View 1 (cartoon, rainbow, N blue to C red):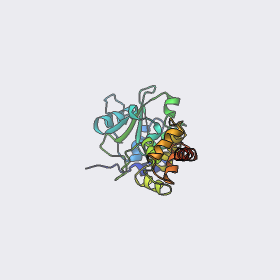
View 2 (cartoon, rainbow, N blue to C red):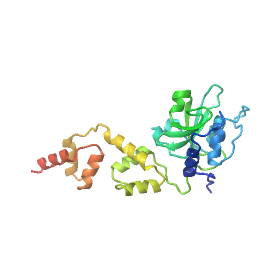
View 3 (cartoon, rainbow, N blue to C red):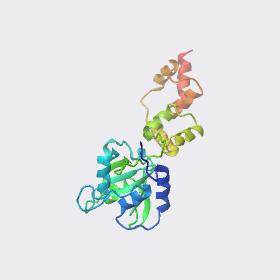
View 4 (cartoon, one colour):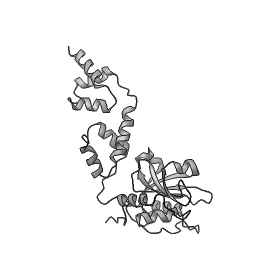
Length: 245
């Protein structure tokens, strides 16, 4: 049976954001992160006489479930309400923080020492030189961090591709569905815009042939899909008309 954290993702993000701007003891990132989720201390897991952020990661790696940095295509894909970890630092203590969505974290000592703030995930690497390890789904004491009943298992990039393909419908219904499934509609839309702005490899002639073959469906849905994918529906239709004369 799944054991959920006392404060799962949605609640944890709200709790973390409520701390922003407030004072918190310097160097106590692991303690603060555990408090946000209510999961309790992980102790000195690696036996080096320091109960630090690296212990939190190592224990989650051994007894919980983590997503390693190497498997994360974009930091924007990291779901809100997860524990994030870094290694390194002058004393090797690493760092822990809480993801709040859109590639950002709530963190102690960032950007101001002794206070909780909001920064980009990569700020920790850029400013402190720490190595990002990944994020935690089930922490070392066995607590699941996702909201109960959440189906949020897809990356933002995957969701954006599905939106472009029309699988989530249109707004405002699309945003409602995404939010109900545990995703951030704003983050997904940002990725949709990014993907749609990429140069496309297909020519108008190729697209017209696909339209004639029925691969893009019928209007008005066809035009919406073409536009979402970064193409000009009118130009494609003109070529279709020319071919069918």
